[in-house]
Picture 1 (cartoon, rainbow, N blue to C red):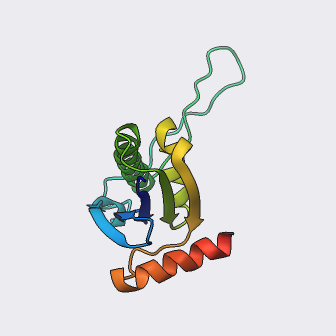
Picture 2 (cartoon, helix red, strand yellow):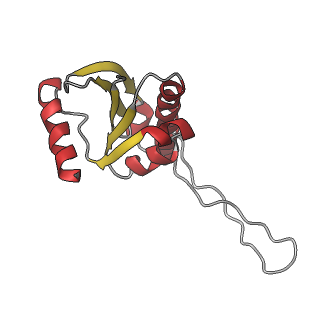
Length: 148
């Protein structure tokens, strides 16, 4: 039987675990994205120019402004999604469960590929990134029992 993968993440840090049938957690990989912690001003975010769109023919429209920090969050979510997708395509896990803080959980879910989406067992809006390995198993079981 293949193990379950559990990703615990926030916008700047993530840990990927493998959980066997007996419930034992094994760390697989750790991810850091320090740019997500910086302020938008430190990332070089300046107010982009705006152009008013006329109602007539040939008016210009720009996409909504996304600040630099949110761009970094989306980049980290994409990186994590790609890693999970590689594992899913290689058949390394039976299912994937996400534990991430809001709004990063939504960004992460949008970054998941089709392979991971098929294996997605659950997505929980809780930040467990600061929880130590000894307590983590209990917290995961608690969150899963609350969802059931």
